[in-house]
Image 1 (cartoon, rainbow, N blue to C red):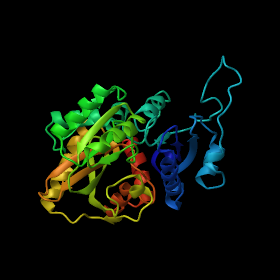
Image 2 (cartoon, one colour):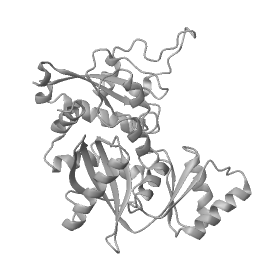
Image 3 (cartoon, one colour):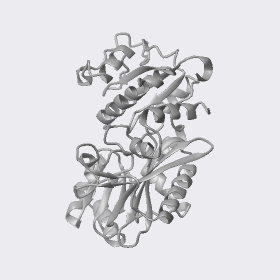
Image 4 (cartoon, rainbow, N blue to C red):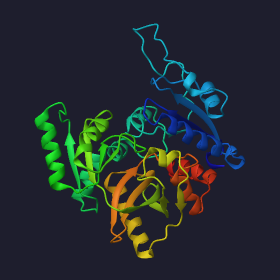
Length: 355
């Protein structure tokens, strides 16, 4: 046993985020993996659930949520009785944690917020740090860096903090989209995940509604040109040396890979993807290069488009806390690469400890 004693893993999940339910599903999978017989010899797990109001619940209730004995939606906003002493971590026993494993998808987690908080505990964490997380979450900053490095991407436009109530502003945005991009286009909030707030726009009449939908999540909006593509994904783990998984492909029956497709549909997952070995090699090289560019390490999933007509590789985005649900690609990619979920979570802890 490494270190001579069991390591206590602090599993953080839930969160004040529009991906709250996805986080719970991911945490259930990881919790079960750590409780596999072989891992129980090395690890104990202490769960920390953050409800939709942002309140941290104690580990007993948190664990009951993970094993299905308590329903997360029954938790209520905690009242603060002493306004002079507001400490959202008061009563949470986290001093004996050896390694943190944050599984907070979306805002207040995947954007680096939780990583900043964890830093004050002076304990290692599974995943990358504040900068890589923030850049990986922010689609506009991420794409700007990729553009400067000449990494291949779809054509896109950026609109930041525009007043959509101003008719002139609306007309300017629509005119620029019509002039510079071809339909269909995808309208996305800069900071979101699981395809939430994203719309596929097929003509001019649909633009304004899509902009308003995206703005409900983030006033900074990204518009991408939609192409006929295959959805290709690659897993990354490691620190100083990044390792790539097998390449996978998602075939979905819906019109595009939206939230329902990701979590509620029977998609066809193909691992390894049926693509040329040369293309696979190039995808893996771009995956590593893009993670290095954003200071992303620990673990991540890098998403690509492969244009059907040309086989051109296009870098889409990086997810620094990819899903661990039963439908999630990341654990599937690593199982196909020789790491079952029980081995994967243990490997991620070892990486965080540089073992």
